[in-house]
Image (cartoon, rainbow, N blue to C red; front, top):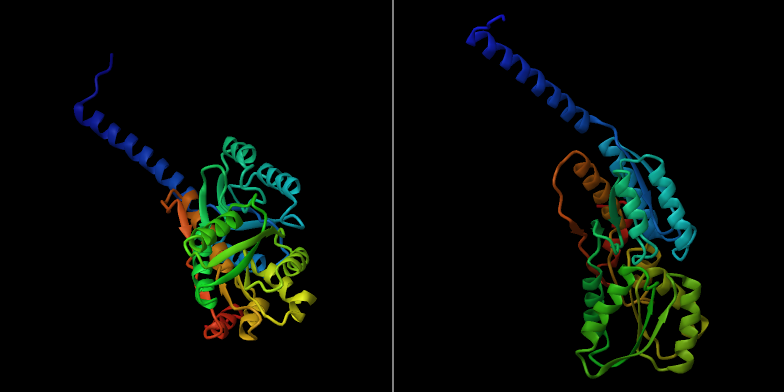
Length: 320
């Protein structure tokens, strides 16, 4: 049997260790330098908010050199169609998928399917029933901010209505609950009507008609997005209402901000869709590279008033 010296064995061990480390470095380099393929499935593309989210996603994809495919159903109520799009995206062998669920309470099937395929799942704009990473607004706080502003606008008294998007979506549900948490603490302000308009301006117009027939002297309406607020101000009964009510909503749509400037809308709680889209892609890439990110990332919200609305409009239009 051939005998080897201790020095030879030590040299051989060092060579093997170097080969192993070299292989590990190569794997790390591949992981870091890989051009990732990411999928995004949004709720719709029927408002400026979603266009802003899409713009942020596309900018991040360009800056970070990743491929991104964006899909979406026609309307936020197209739950089953969105599920098909999500499954198709996962089957397309993406490295990660960001989803803004049309139904926050029915996400287990496709998130489990994605995990089985080793696809990273990320929630954008609206949280999921399943435990995932999330980038979006703190929607309960948005509701509270809207209520605080409303209370001051109404001088601490009055009857108000709430028109919400679908409560299947946690974002809208949380905004309503946050709003009610604050209003319920004030005896002289009362919510007399709650309706759901599925984020549709047309449905919001119909809800406004019902409200004004039943409560012609109502003091104000809170809507959980800007599209519904724009529907209210187009309603003929609202236009003819001598006792002009206050309207407070959510989002950063330019036409709604102009409504604040023109005193048709009292105030808006901002929601920065562009930052939301950019940060989601940025964090997905970090996770795929093995870096740590916060589980929940909340994009800061502000109150848009007649005094600062022009600044927010300038921001929307690409100003500084």
